[in-house]
Image (tube, rainbow, N blue to C red; front, side, top):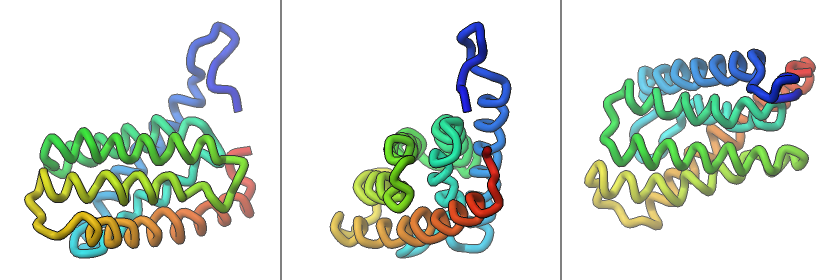
Length: 165
C-alpha cells in the first residue's frame, strides 16, 4: 500500500487507516482499564496487541503513536508518562515496521521498548519504589502477553482473513 498519492501528499486511505488504529488503541486502553488489566504488577493492555499492525500497513506507526498519546491524555497520565509512554510506543511500532518481513519477531521491539522505558516512568512519574529490574520483568511480562500473545493472535487472524490486502 502506498502512503502517498500522485502529488506526493499522504493518501486519504493512509490517514483514515491511521485514525481508525488510533481510535481502536484508545478504546482498547479504556477497556483494559475498565477491566482492571491496566494496573497491578503485570499490566495487560489490550491496545498493545495493535503494535503488530505494521506487518500489514505503515499507517500503524502514526496510528498507534497517536492512539497512545490520546489514551494517555484522556486517562489523566502525568506528563512524563504522556511523553515517554508515547515514545516507547513509537519506538516499538517503528521497530515493528522495520521487522515486518520477520513475522515472528514483530512484537519484540514493542516488548523491549516498553520493558526498558516504562519502569523508569513508573519510578519517576508515579513514585513506584520497586527496583528497575523487577519492573522490567513485570512490564515485560505484560507486554509479552499483550503485544506478543494477543498481538500474535491478531496478526494470525488478520492474515488468515486476508485483511489489509
